[in-house]
Length: 318
Image 1 (cartoon, rainbow, N blue to C red):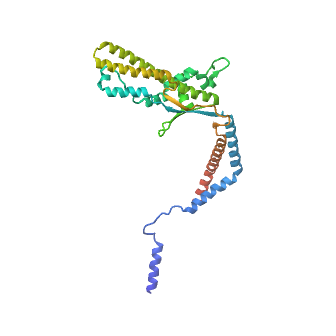
Image 2 (cartoon, rainbow, N blue to C red):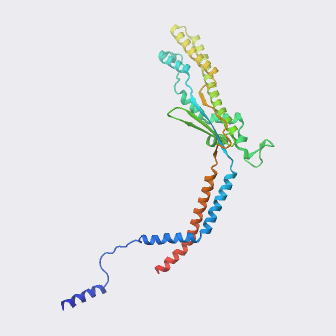
């Protein structure tokens, strides 16, 4: 009798609504595996299209790569030069203390290396180089009519600033080794002879510009010291001015006789071999084109089948 009562109670409990807490279990790995299997099967069914378009993408990329012009690199290794005369003059100014300030002359020779490197990187030097070598028709050859020696009709004539931006961003690169102090100037261009010539001439122009600047500064300082010398009869001051003038004369002398005034060429640029191009990497371009075409095609195939899968899941769930 007791057993039958317990059975009746269990039956009533099971017949009623469920009680307690329930945990929703997310789809397991089996469902994800099924989706992945569906994707793989879908790609295998369209393998002819997938392989065909992948090969086509590789061929198109290879054709484009073949059309690209070879770029060659020439480089110059430089070492900044420390001018001994300027260092001596600076030391002299430090020993004299206020005498140099008394005549109003600044002998600070510090920061010469930083100034030289800043000049090498300056847009002004690139601007002067482009103007001196008449590089705009070369840099923008696609807009230049060589037969008529004028810019093609309908194209925008590039400015010097356009040339400076192109030259400093894509043609000339300056790399400084902080550990050794060696500076490398690289020039990348389609013509290896032209690249080597530009690299050497660019360094020569930098040395010339810094040398002219040093000569102008020294000559102006000498003229100023001569004027100050005529204003005073104090013997110590006159002696100090004579010594300062001697230092400026030495600076002018060094600037006039030293060809590599600010940068000494360790290894000049030479034209690279026709086989030694730096770009384009045609094999990598072809492989990249094939991979990109394959990925795009696979994505398109799966996207096209996505609606069918969703409708199938909806019918199954219903």
